[in-house]
Image (cartoon, rainbow, N blue to C red; front, side):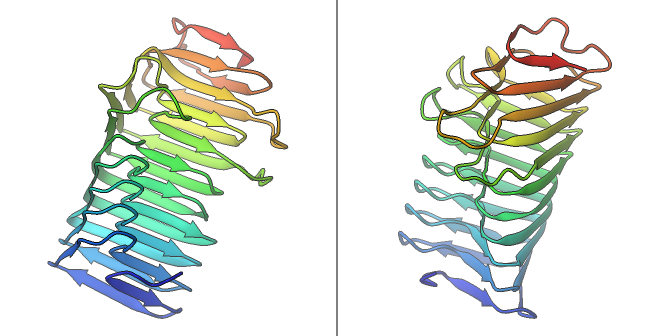
Length: 274
């Protein structure tokens, strides 16, 4: 991996506890915290800041985990520097009452390349010039009582507030569930969707969750070279959303809306209501 990081935890049984600390990284290609090969990191009441490009906040590799709590802050300022990244193989992210902030392009609050489980509760965060989250791996993501935002991104380059896609032949299901939370697009292009999905099968459940977006709520499509059928199961409970629902090409959105909350939304393409 290179191990050019401030703190590196390696090996099953290794546990690093960071409490009431401040960690500042002012170098490119250097992450603040890395855990790999079964190691775990626990962060309490601490602030972690990186300032240059390719300088991530926390990176998990190969069956590693991080637990964040106690008003901790993870902040990145450079390009291509996600706050949290689940990279190779399985990883586990759990956070409660904490803050995320990123300012660079290609620097989502959460970036998942590998498989894993992510549970966020009472998380607050804003990504400037990047997505709220980019989901590529086989993930189960649960978000509750949280407020996550992004601002300043345009409609080009596969942009959306929450981007879900696969660039390989892994057709395993991705699950994203949100309860009592809010996702917002601030000062973005009007056509930037809140959810942008391609070459992936995913279950998205939004329960008592509010979104603030422009003209498009969700957009799904499938590229010609993909072996994965894009299929999005979208379940909505207790709260409606503004914006168009779009399924292009061979993509399909299956919409479950028992309360008829989305009856006034414009629908384009292959959208099936259940």
